[in-house]
Every structure is written in C-alpha cells, then in structure tokens.
Length: 515
Image 1 (spheres, rainbow, N blue to C red):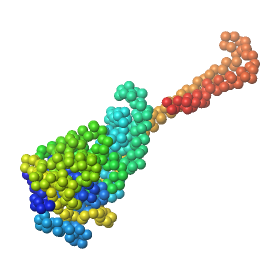
Image 2 (cartoon, helix red, strand yellow):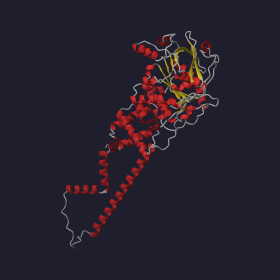
Image 3 (cartoon, rainbow, N blue to C red):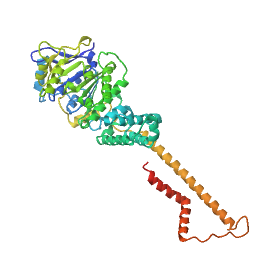
Image 4 (tube, helix red, strand yellow):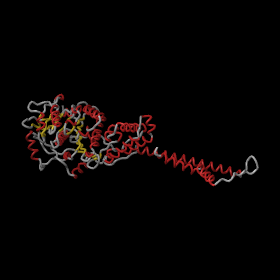
C-alpha cells in the first residue's frame, strides 16, 4: 500500500529504521513530549515527507519556527555538522537541502493570506464554545440561528449576529411562546462576549470571501503537496479562538469531503498543535464531536495528528484512535508526571530489548520512542529512534523571504480584500427604515385628518354666526368663566389638537421606551 516516509534510524545501539506507511497515514497519530524535546523538528520532517510524497499538509506555526519549511537548509547553518553526522549515523544517504511549496495563512492578515469563514458556517455549537456560553445562553444563540434561517437572513459576519440578537430581543415575547424563554440577560451576556471577541481580533475571522477548502488540498506541478502554514504566534494569545478555528476547519473537512475508503496515501494531513487547548474545560458535547470526526474522517482520506506535551492531554476515546506515534522525552518530576509516564508506556507494543517507560524518560533531544502501523494496521513494536534531520531551514525566516513567498502563492490577491455584501445586518436595517417610514406616513395622514376636521368644525361655527338653528333668537351666552376655569379650558383645547397629541406621545414614549 503506497510508499513510506523515512522517520529515522536506530538510537542507543538499535539499528532499526523507522518508516511511516502512507497507506496507514490516515489512521491518525500523536506527537508528544516535553518542551524542548524536539516535537517541532519532528513535525517539520513529517510535513516534508508528506509533501514530497504528494500529500498536502495543514499545520499551525505557534512559535514561528515552521516557516523555515519555505526555505532550503544551508551548509552554513549552525547545526549543519550535527545534521550531516546524524544523517550518516542513521543511514540517510540521500540527505540534501531543499525548500518546500508553502502557503502562509493568517487570521489577522498580517503574515499571510487572510483566512475567513462565515458565522453561519461556524454554527451555534462552536460559537458557544468560542464565547464560553452557558446552556441558557447557548439556547438563545440557537434560537437566533433558527430565526435567521426562517427569515432568510444570511449570517456572514459579527454585525449580522449582533443585529439578529437585537431582533430577537425586540421580539422576545413572541419568540418565548414559540421556542421557550428568551431572557434579556442571556441576550446581553452574548452581546458582551461578542465585544470581547472583537477585542481579541476575532471579528476578522468572520466575513467573505470565505476560505475554499480546496486551497488546502493543492498539489504543485512537480507533484509535491503544498504545505499550508497558519501563522499562529499572535493567535495563541487567544487560545480559545485558536482551538475553535482549527476544530471548525476539521469539521468542515469532515462535512464537505466525499468518502474514499482506504486510499494509497492521504488526501490531506492535518496537524493540530497545542492540542490540549482543544480539550481544556471542553463540554462533553464538544469532545463527542471531536471523537466522531476523528473516527470517521479517515474514510475521507484525511489524517489527523495531535501535537501536545503529554498524551494525557488527549481524551482516552480519541487517544485510542491514534495509531502512529512519536513520543519524545517526558519528565517525571511529580507523582502525576510519573503516572502519566507509566500510562504513556502502556499504550505501546512492548519491545523485549528495553523498558518503554525508562526509554521515554531517558531519550535525548532529537530522539524519540516511536511506533507506526504496519501491515493490516497492526501497531509496530516500540523502538528508540534518532529522528532524521530536516531538509528545509530549521527556524524562522526574514520578513523579505515571507513577503516573497506570499507574493508567489497561487492564491495571491484572492482573499486579501474583504467583501461586505448585503446580509442580516443590512436587511434588518432596511426593514427598520421601511417600518419607520410607514409609521411617519401614517402619522402625517392622521395629522391631515385632524386639520381637516378642525377646519370643518370652524366653518360650521362661522356659518351659524352664533344663532341657533331651531330659533331666530341669538344664542345664549354662557356665564363668564373664572380665571382658573379659563386656563383649564385652554389646556384641554390645546391637548385636543395635533400638537397636544404629539406632547402626549412624547411623554408616553419616554415612559415606555425601555419596555
């Protein structure tokens, strides 16, 4: 089945070469280890291997180190001697320096092409996770989405969502009868969370043109898979936004891609770095969603690799689905660390040549305990492995190099400018303007009718000339009013007219505007 990716050779006297079989690469995997143990380099050489095999890759660059994939390594590099020595030790005879096809993406549009989705595509479940809503608040958000669907109001950006929430608040009495209680406090809480999301720069995630997933699955003319790198150094300051965005992307791949069974090689490999952020304080419904996606997306040709410090960061049901594993050193300083170390060792197929737990604790930088799926998907025996050196540059790149890579990208100019087409915000504003114009027209018509009635009554009084119609005697004059009675009558007459009604409307509007 397919080809293989060379991962490394034997360490500590064990000359067993380790390969990742492309035919089983969509069975997912795990890259774990303490800070500084070598996870980033492992991720880099795996991305190189998949790209060289014609498999597109998506990964997040949390520290800026993975941008070096776009540039070839150099003999003048600081670690050149160590790399060539490592290559000779593990028998990596065709080791050479080369750059790989890279597309930079950035949610903020600063260090890569902007990447966007719509509020509707994100959906209420992931938005609730992103905004950290309670069950009651999530219920109100679901009502807002349902109402937008029924009223034909597209939810594209945060302005649309804010406008539909105002609409829900204005019609909450009728909506409560139909969908259940819509509390003003819940609406206010959601609106405040949206303001916080805007402060984190999350508003730039929502809008159009939305990301076309086909952009992540490009294969260049030379047959190499394109590596899509999400610049995430700034995004990591909003960890919930980072985790939710990656989960949305994974969910969209799951929803849109067709079934392909077991291909000879994956259609896409997705690396989820800092995976613990996805599961920290996550509700059970969200964990179930991730488990479902991880279990079923492999049949669509997508391999998912979680990158984290400790295997315990991954829920047990998901960890059991990760067949290809690279375990760098774990430090056992506390009782919890020792339990995690034993648990990690127990998940491997034992090797009689060494104790797995001891090996995990003792492997050095650039060395790992590995196990990859073999024929018929059977886990391979655990081995101590010296990870092969990268062919691309290790570390960051210059701003000029990044700018040149972005300019040469096949998607250059396609997503750079946001498009704000008419959607829920504009449609609701148009409805409000039409309703206001209609109310003004009705008020003007009523004012004209009042004026005509006064003119008619005045004409009747003038025509009568103060003489009774039944007799020719002059009309009897009323007795003179006192000063108080005269003022009272004048006020009543004034309030009976058009200006009087406007004063009353103004008073009542002031009293009941809050309701």
